[in-house]
Image 1: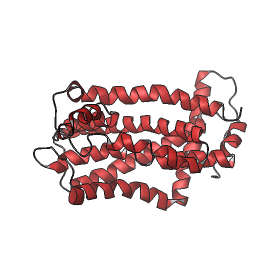
Image 2: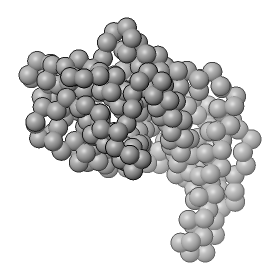
Image 3: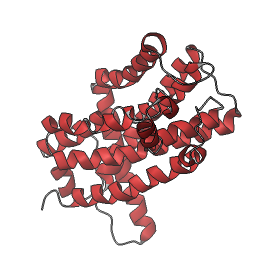
Length: 276
């Protein structure tokens, strides 16, 4: 556990004071998570390198972008950026279960600090690593020939949709980690992430799939984000003319918001009941 110090309990000085204490405690927990990066650089490096390896493999060996007219790299890279938002959740889940197993979270809960600061710190550190992963993947994508064509504002909008998807997936991971309770259960739980990632339009267009499969793939939350950011980047999207494809940007917002609306309160409630 980090040597980061915690603050004293907030007094009843009004909403502004309580918000200040909440931010201070959350920042303390975020610094604790960031300190783990310095002590576990290999784990951080693996999380950055793994999606890069997948991108290079599908670009040069396996072949992605099936069913796309034009440069398949411009189809594949945005899809891989979306898929990257699902990678690394096992690291978050392991960190939560390890803290549970060692009694670290119980210790924090007994201290005079805002209860939700532990979850906020964990999620903030995860989002920072996601930004770093996107930066690395964007650089590698540029190196293999991918380009965006619609200007900086549209590109920033695409990044915003990617981080929104990550934030939603993050709360799914935190909740499932607390349900699993033990690090050895994370492997079984994280298998649930892979169908969401690979039953999508990340590597191939729905039109190139059997009709029943392609129809389901188009409604996958990750497919919505991948299609939306392809449109924002000005890359080929393999459009099928379906409602989901035509309204991908709307779905890329609605799906994560719906996931957050379900799993954020579930995670908070599970965290509040851990010691009961």
